[in-house]
Image (tube, rainbow, N blue to C red; front, side):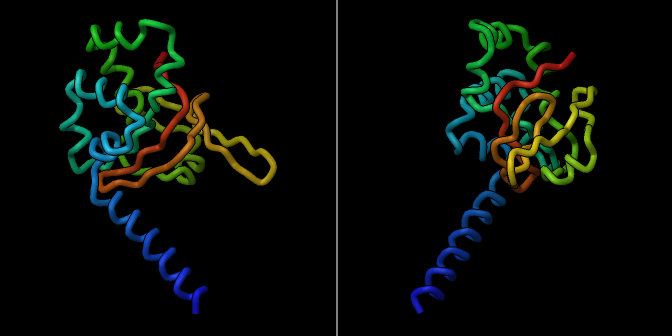
Length: 159
């Protein structure tokens, strides 16, 4: 009986978490996560909030705060003062349409809203397959009501 109850609670909690994520959009999810403060600041500065709150769907490659911290000192501040360049970089992180990691791997490359393509590849370590966007590792995938967020470990830079 305990096993059945435990299984039910696990399924119920997993479903509740999934439904709560699917009830929020990309921006709400990023704000609520707490690990995307720099990204949220940049999206706000570039006036992209309403776009990323729209129905979409979008696939967003979302660098964490630690990913932004890998950039050379002063880079984020300089970008916040150069909105055209900031917008170019941010839109390089967005793809029109909703793509799971598996779908990205099938395509091997996708065109970003910015206009350039990003490459998608896999690296296998033992029994674990890791997905990479250019050279940035996808650490987590979050499905939201207007698309999907792939959390990445470094900022993507267009050519």
